[in-house]
Length: 108
Length: 112
Image (cartoon, rainbow over all chains, first blue to last red; front, side):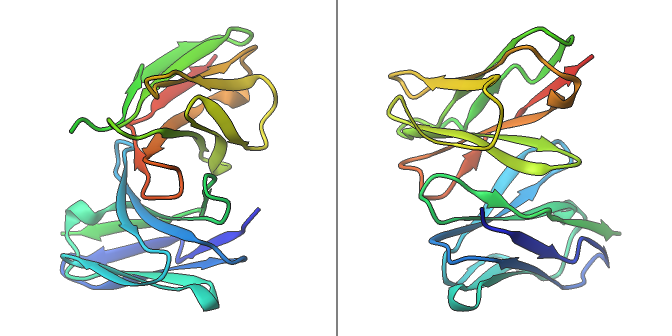
């Protein structure tokens, strides 16, 4: 299967700070998504981004498929951004491989 | 539009028992996939169904099985439960499979 590595594994930020999360993958993919898992376990889809750049409010993501990585940017972080961020990739059409996640804690 | 609904939210079983988990996808979504999440192994793919057919299966023993009904609702079954089956089981739906995934809140299974 595809190996997915996320960095950093843990991140602690002061409220209002910016951050960049990285996702590297070992094979070509045709689907890449970013998720946020809240403290109650719910996985929220942030971006469907197999290539290019997208923005949604304070969040943006960029995927460079040819170089096998994706970046998630969080600007002006808030305490509600705390949780675990996962990157998931797929090249078969129906089986996603997840990274081990980045655990983010935003301190007021 | 209602999201992905998983029932039950919590489940406690003992070793050797079997369990059935249910997932109702978003209306119009025909693909349902299941994932197991544990602290040690992270999120791992179990299987994916589309139009009542299993299209893909992850690397799990045969004790893990599933099915999908004509209304796209899906169930997964785990027989002869082991302590290591304790996990959060997550269901996701999408229109065709290779698109944006939407997850349910999960079923937290504890095996004693």
